[in-house]
Structure formats: structure tokens, C-alpha cells
Image (cartoon, rainbow, N blue to C red; front, side, top):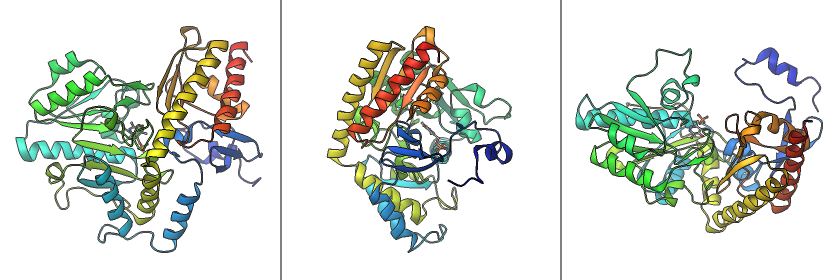
Length: 404
Ligand SMILES: *Cc1c(COP(=O)(O)O)cnc(C)c1O
């Protein structure tokens, strides 16, 4: 343990936009993490649905080490082998034909929204600029993406905001039908709202949305930054629905813990990102792309994806059992290994408290707002770790109930 680095340093030298826990994790392996004091945690958070293969997966470490001795960065004046390889893998595995790489989810969505505006202008004239998004959605923190997100509080103080973005209720096809028009250039939607509380779209909603977008020449953008890369048991969650988007964004688990984002689309739409129209210094760098390429190879595997479904079933029955005994949750929503446990009315507002108690018990969890406990563990979490984590979570739930 490095005694010169302590949690207090965070408050001294970091801007106060985060309020991290009092412990400092220093090491991870698989689904376990250790802090400065050597205390062990079971990781049910997975870095907010990022470390889909756990911590320091040997094949990812190996790829990173190998690439780190070959080539780190060149700029987009030259391309590189890992970027082309990853783009080939992504297009082969999805509806998409072409890929743009970024460094984060927000940047992937920024690219998607800019492309949608440009495509509409190129093909249908200057008036087709409206972007429809949904209440309680989350698309990142750049000014454009945070404005598209459906939580007004995240925009407060940052005005003036980009214009012509409309927010509608999620899973409400009638309202969408009423609003969508020839002026709409794109609709951006999460197939399962993640930050919004693990709320899945109803199939009829996405099907209706697809039909309306086609009817009005609006592009359908699926933000799969949280739901993609095997999280729901399919490589991307649109593959669980009978609906194909025009643009799909990925990030979070795409690099298995190494920062990278991607925007996937068709050749016809991609044409509007003509030479010089958009770009990123680090986007598509060989380090990130090589790690993502290995992560994608490992995740897009029938055995691994079947394992997600098995773990889903076990988490669901485990959580239901705990809840039968302790009774904090009114609803347990399980979409693959994206899990939301909604607190009963009498416990509402206590999700952060439960997170803290869980940490004390040695299990890392997440929240999605004040009323939902969120779990996004590694897709390959070993069964003993799963059981141990659930036992520790039970202790935390009891502690909350007893008022410790
Ligand atoms: C996390 C997230 C983002 C933002 O990704 P960053 O890498 O933090 O910019 C966007 N959309 C969804 C659905 C997310 O879950």
C-alpha cells in the first residue's frame, strides 16, 4: 500500500463532480477486487457494465502487452491493422457495413447525432433537423448528448443548449406517432434504459418506432453503449428484438475496460460523413482497437452468451430468494446480466445507502437513481463468486432493514 496516496487527496486535487467511496481499489482479478487495505470485494458492478470479462482477463492482458510493444498511436493520417480488423469483426457480427471509432460512449453518440443531422440535410433539405429522444434516457455528457438525454437536471446551468431536441415518454407509441413528422431527422433510444432504472422497451414500441422512422425518413439510432457486447445474452440487444436500427452506438464493454467507442451504420448513411466532416485524434488507435478486437472475439461466442443466460437465471432466483426473506424490493428486472432491483415504496431513496452497506460487506454494486439497485457483473463471473456476492448482498440488505 502506497501510504502517500490517500482518499483525502481526491478532495484536494480533483474537481468535485464525483463523490467516490472512501476506499481506493488497487487490484482486480476476475470478479474480485482488493482495496489499499487488502480487503476483498466481489464485483457485481463491472465498472458500470464495462469489465464484461472481469478484471485483467489473461487474453486481454496478453493482447495489450503485445500491442504495447508494437504500436500505440499514429493519428488518422495513417490507418492501422487492429482498427481495420475490429471494424471487420463488428460489421460481420451486426447489420452494419461501416464503423467510426471514438474514445467513449458520449463521443459515439455525438457522432451518431451529427451524422443524422448531416444525412438529413444532404438528402432531404435544411428543415429536417428535429431529434426525438426519451424521458429518463441517458446518452452521455457532452453538451449535445446530455441535451438528448432525458434528465433536465443534467443540463441545468449549461445553457444555452443545442436546439430542436424533443423528449417523449418511453414505451408510449401513441405519443410518438403523434409527434414524429417529416421534420424529424432521427430518434435516439436505448433498447433498455440503463441509467433510467433498467427499463426494457416493449417489442411493439420498438417495432412501431422502426415503422415510423422508415415512413418519415428519420434515422433510428440505438444507443447500445450499456446493453451491447453480450450484456443481455445477445451480442447487441437489438438482436433480441425484430428491429434493426440505422445507426448503433457501442462503448463501455466494447474495450473490456480499455476506453473505446464505436458508431456503426450502413454505407449509404455513412456517406454523409464525407472526407473531413468529423474526426478524433485518438479514435481508432491501435491499442484500444486490439484490446476491443480480442474482447469481441471472446464475447461473440455462443458458449459465452449461453453462460450469460444461465447466470441470468441464477441471479434472478438468488435475488428472489433473498427478497422473499428480507423483502426490500418490489420489482426485480433481469435483462441478461443487466439487473435492476427496484426498492419498495417504504425504502425509496435508499439505493445509495444500500450501495454503501454492500461495500462494507464486501460486494460492489451500482445504483440507477435513488430507487434502483443495479448490478452489471462480469459476463463470466464464476458461480462461487456469484453466490458469495449474493450472500454479502443479503447481509447488506439485512443491515439496511435493521437500520444499521
Ligand atoms: C454510459 C453510457 C453513455 C456514455 O458513455 P461514456 O463512455 O461515459 O461517454 C451513453 N449512453 C448510455 C446508454 C450509457 O450507458
